[in-house]
Structures are given as C-alpha cells and as structure tokens.
Image 1 (cartoon, rainbow, N blue to C red):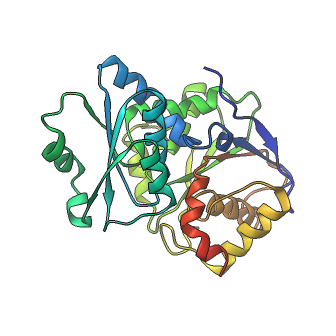
Image 2 (image 1 turned 90 degrees about the horizontal axis):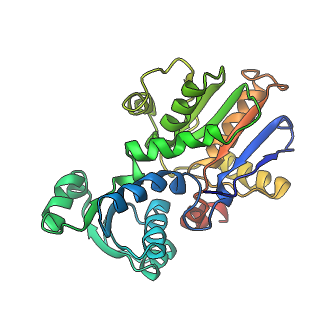
Length: 289
C-alpha cells in the first residue's frame, strides 16, 4: 500500500543537518504512528471477522480520533472508554462525527482496561479489544515498517514516546536491517525510564537504544515557557507544525543535544514526525495566553 510520508530536509538554526520523516502527512485523522499502529490491527480485525473496535484514551486522545476514523472508513462500529468526567471538546466531537460511541469512566475504573472491556463487551462476539494508544504486537510490526521505507543511512534516528510502541517498532526495524543507527527516544512522561522495559517487551536487543528522560517538561501534557517559545519559533521559522505533548519535546531535545555538544552538528539525523497534531487543540490556552 502506498502512503505519503516523504523525508524533508530541515533548516532551523543549528538543525541544518536534520531530515524529517513526515508521517504527519499520511492522513489528517489517522495520522502518523496512529496509522502505523492500526494497519495490522485492522488486518487482524478482518481476519477474525470482527466488526466492532473497542478502545481507550483520554479526552484529547489522537488515538481515539484515529480509531473512529479508521472504523468509519471500513464500515466498522467503534466505541471508546474515555478516562475522566464527561466532557465535550474538539477531539471528542470528531470521534462522534465518525460514529464512535463514548463511555466515560472514572480514573480508578479505567486502570483495569481488560476488566472494563469484559464487563461491557464480553457477550459481543463482534467486538475487538484495542489497548490505549493502540499498543500491541501488530502496532510494533506496523511501526517497524518505517525503517524499510528509509533509503538513506542515518547516524541517529529520533522519536517521541508515550507507550513506547513506536520506539519498539523502530528498534526492531533497525535491528532486523542490521543498521548501525542509534535510536534516540524522548519520553513525554516524567520518570520515563520505564519506556525501556516497555520496548523490551517487544524487542529484546536494546543495544542501539538511547533514552533521554530529561525532556518531559514536567510530565505528560506538561509544558514550560521555554518549550512553548521553542515550538512557536520553530513552527514560524520552518512551517512545520509540532505539538507540545510529543514532537515539540523531541525537536527541543535534538536542538539542545546539538547545542550542548552531545550530538555532532554534522551528524546525519532523522527525526520521525509521528503526527498527532490535532492534540494541539487541547493545548491552545498554553500556546497563546
């Protein structure tokens, strides 16, 4: 299947040697790593003759929008367990327009997703469980495909991480191709060392993995004035949209690592733009206040 994910050269201050894999251009709603994660999940859905996608996420989840759009385009039903109190926002409106049913659950109940799923859908033979963020072996396989699309050789590949699924796929692709490339992962969450364990669940050889856990800016969906200023300047200077939750932190990390000498300015670097730009809507007050 052909997808539109070109590699563009970036010209931003010290980042003149950086290329960007534009997975954000794959689709406006099933964007970036969400498309990758759902690709083989969808194949498994059809192989098992299921017709109802059931998944999980927060109120501003890009994954929920992607799953809803994917279901609608493939004539499937979709339902999401949404973490927290009942709200209405831009993301959930899109989900509902794509036909997704929303079930709001308290944060304590949300912790056991398998139990939630079983309570509501145990008697629905058409339902198919998709974990939060799409995390699964199928998702890792889909993200590993990124490496097979890259024709040039890079010293370093960077990606942002939430669950670590995309990183696991990239590392698998690097290992399977026998590349000497180092994979740099920027966790969006505080205390992101656990990402290595999550990656290790899917890919055992971590020798080419390097975690940078100090670019979380306070934790998931947290920001600082420095990060916001960077994102606004970066986007205005390059025309490339990045978000405060994932890709903004990744590009900030690359820029900082070059500036402090941890990366050579002439190194050949590829950044994976994993999409998720609709999530900017949940951060608009932080971007412009």
